[in-house]
Image (cartoon, rainbow, N blue to C red; front, side, top):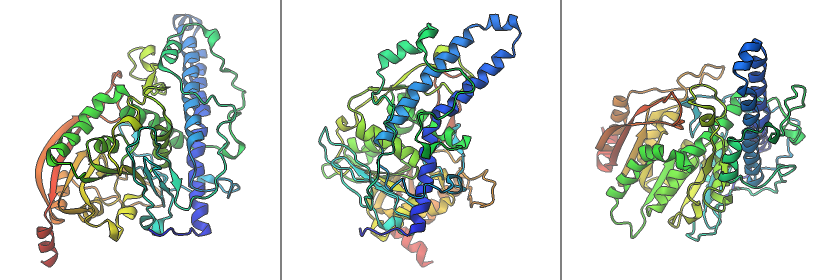
Length: 493
């Protein structure tokens, strides 16, 4: 596809949006430190007798700081590995907060779902495993026609590089300054999480300390709490997609999909093609590729893509990194050790997963990217997992899925209908079409789909399995097949 040039206004808006997201990552540690200080202020309000009873909380707060610093180190390593699609030194005097007024924090189970409307407003990215080129940020008008999609090889040591469509000369974000580039091994991290010597914690408890002291000045911003919350959600999404602890959830959500694809396509000597919109951190798309499909994940969120780039491109072996995903809530914990427990990732090394040639990740808005004429009847299968309810207009999603599939192609869906824009109240008055499951199936029938398999599956989304509270969904699972002849008949009526 032809590469398009951006207008100055488009470039400026994209840079502002990306800077806001990068700033949220940079401010992760400072925001977490503010939380710990708030805990300490509450502790100081206790009576002497109550303080004596809860004396161990002082140690817990120091352990929290250590865990936060480990998460922050991972975040900085992740940003160091990210190659922005634009020169981030441009438009430095712009107000980062006016670039994403349409941002919404609607979540599945208190965590960011893969297609939240907050970042990739005008972008297309693809990755492939041989030089897995990613098309970051082709602005809105022509985003769907600029998919420089690279294809994946099956070589073990090759990486998934994410580069911009126009491949601008981009300076380093500056994340390496003062940052330990190593991922933290599970053994040392686990020992630290259970350590009981306060002298081992170097973090200051001085409430007058200047926040962001290690942060490049360009990103030392007053970041909205909702933005930092999305960073915390990404950390929990790592558990869902890339940690052993998330295997239960993956078995509930991904395994039925993989088993259905295996049943539907018994002969994969010539690999069928499969599109995975709302791919998040990429695990499901990778598993489908490993099953013998030419798989392409599509993702809208820069929060997700920055993280998936690191995991797919820059991890060297299984379980090399450690995070502390559950530290940001003191509620419903069985014990402090449960709350502060480490989680290692990735549970498998992506490049060693036996992916099929052609595996790719394409970043951009699903509607914009896949409304392209060249995408019509291009796919043997479309898999949507916790994706349909991210639409402003779910009818449009279903119509596009129908157009994407070849005659006889299959659509496998798994997920609830927790519409992301149902509770959006703001000046933009965003469209939100919220249909019942019955109406969704009726719309699918209108666009030529025939229902073959249907059931409800109980599952969670980025759940803390050790928590006293579990939010569960009765998710709709179905397989529908496109009957082009019936769809054409509908058009003639």
